Image 1: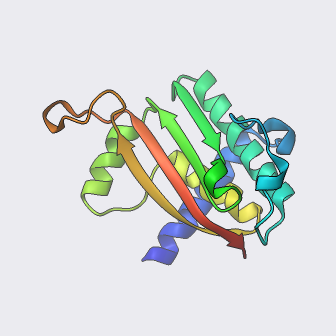
Image 2: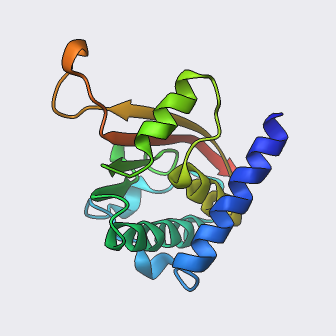
Amino acid sequence: GAAALRQFQLLWGRALVSELAPGADRRDYVSPFPEKQDEFEDYDYDKDLLLDGLGALRATLDRMKAGGLLSYFEISIPYDDYGSVVTVAVDDHASIGAEMLLAEQSNNIGGPVQAIVRAVMEKAKLNYSMDAFFLDPSTTKQDVYNPTQLLLSLSNLRKM
C-alpha cells in the first residue's frame, strides 16, 4: 500500500543522492531570488537542515542534467509563502512520459525527482504535503497540450 510505496521512494531517492551528490549541503543551494532575511521567520523547523536538503537536491539534479536526463530545473522558496512552501520545477526530464502514464492509471509511484525530494526532506526531518503537476509552458490549449515540465509543490512544511 501507501507505506510500501513511500518506503520504495525513500530508498530510491537515498540511493540516487548518495551516488550522485554524496557530500552536498547548504553550500550547494542557491536561491533564484535574493534572500530577504525578515521573510524567513515563521517556521518551526531547522532552516539549515532544509537548506542542506535543497543543496543535495540541487547537486543531484545538476548531475542528472550533466548526464542528459533533464534540460533545466529550478528550486525555490517563494517569498509569499517563505518558509512554508518549496517548489521544484524540472523541464524535459527523461521519465516524464512514463510518470504521466502511471499517474493517469492512479499509480502514484512518481519518478526519480519525487524520490530524491522525499529522501532529502526526510533527512531534513520535515513533514510536508507534495503535489505533482505536469505542465506545458508553451500553451494552455488542450488539443496541442504536451507536458514537458514537472512541477512539485511542497507545502505545509513542518518538523517531524
